[in-house]
Length: 140
Image (cartoon, rainbow, N blue to C red; front, side, top):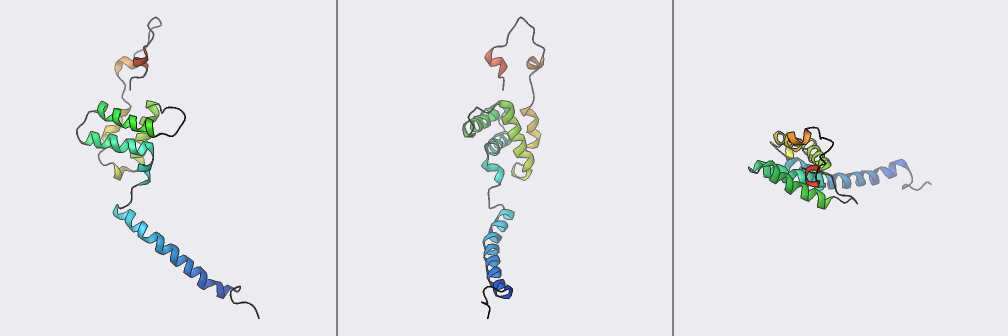
């Protein structure tokens, strides 16, 4: 006679138990995510943390420059790469975080344009005889 654990009807209760355990583990997490009890995944990235800082500071009435400086410092220090994150890439990282999770950053979309605004002096064509200083090249 065949072992009942090897037959299909004998395996169904085992699979049912496993599925019930998995569902019981994940159901509270899914409910907490819907209630806002779990930190969104976007906050676990340097861009997400930079976006959180930038949007919070702008929402609190700080200027673009002060908010940008604080957010960019966090992104530079928490980026795990070998090279420093460029200001342009950090601005893109903040924008991506806000666009991917707009409910986490309410009313921040109106400030994203400031991340990409250039001064008119920066966009004017450079004459051949006047090289830019280091501060002028990195005007973020």
